[in-house]
Image (cartoon, rainbow, N blue to C red; front, side, top):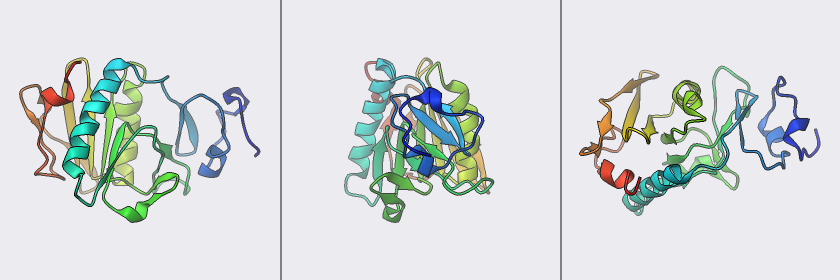
Length: 195
């Protein structure tokens, strides 16, 4: 396969690899889920961006002098999925935290991040709540946060015995509770500031 400059030139019924993904030079935002193309929403809106920026600021402040790195989309994460071929899943989480430098390379993350965060948009809620939930669970992501901007709720899932277990939904007036990073304290008011 050569360089592809138009999304419409791809066969959406075919499976692709990360090597194919690197040849795509079109404007459309896509992820590769077990080899299949998943078209992403257009550029995130203002509310999504504010939440992402607010949370990124808080996480970067917390991890500033620690052995973990915070990355914000667009950032390619090549997930190892046991039930599929190697290098056939590439996602762009809204935010992720990686505590193992060996997983990082010039193109992004090659391995499973410790924590993944998705901010739900109207156009992608099923993808984030169902598809990515199952994908991240299978890949062994230790903790997954789903942020619901309309009701200002954060759902935290922690991986126990290869299954995500959800904590009580966290709402304004509370702090995010992270089993993976118990000393991390972020007030939901700070996450949803100006939203």
